[in-house]
Length: 319
Length: 114
Image (cartoon, rainbow over the protein chains, first blue to last red):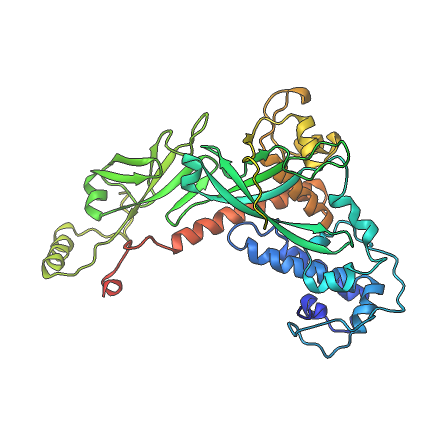
């Protein structure tokens, strides 16, 4: 287990006041909140958000802070750490005071220090996972665009924090086979009946709800059921118009590029987005690719065009 | 992990949730969900509360609103604003990323081919 510097996580000094800590925490929560940082940065922001939450959980609680402080100031972030025996002897704890905090997500360091001791938080954690009848569970899975189009069956590994008999938290992994229905779209949920928490006594088990995130490879992006793709064309195809073959997620199609197609022009392929009722549309977005000037002939052709067309793109001509 | 010989679980896409379903799955009260509808955060189809049908993405939206409320102490209109800005921001970032990573060969100049 590595030592965690909670003061560093919040960017405050060791002698910071409770007010300083709260201010630093609030600022960082706004910055790293996973719901504010959707998109490509989400994972990094979420990691940081958990760190900040864990640090605040300890430093905002005078009892935990005092216990943590008495480990001493000489530890370095990431240093291998083992709590001294009875490190918290003599401290009196009143239990957690921040029930919304997702403590089960905190790291080993926190769990070792604060979760294994009788009297720490035990009562306040009961709300999350231990109710009868079985509670519904929620998780997120990531599939790719092809799977959304075609459906399929695949194993996913879910990790779930669980309490053992002594109240220790352990992450338990389970593999679960998920049949991905054809046409599932980003943000939809798949229900796996009876795969949530087991019921207690006669209670039925809960369900497992999987939120689906659809990722697209570079050159593709999604808006709901509509799918967008870059359509690379040559300057002459864009200028003169052309009939071209395009590989789409649902197979190869013939597409008519109109003449004088400017970059960014969207060509709509109705019903070729993510399948469904109604299906989404596919938009091929024109992207003009300039061929490299690799031969004398190519150079000559460009020069000829420059000479003959006298086109000035800086001049507003309405074209 | 021990090999478990259980049949593959039945998977179904969750669609057209009623108000009651949505409250049960998300652990919310009806009053609170109605407030989210009134604020335009949730957008069910169908007229009248008993006829409302929600997309399953509402489950995620509810979880996000709840986290924003408890973590940032936002009220519902504040959470609504943050959600729409964050979604727009994510969309733009993704688009920007797509534009910055050209597919192989695209826009290749003479230098990049050497």
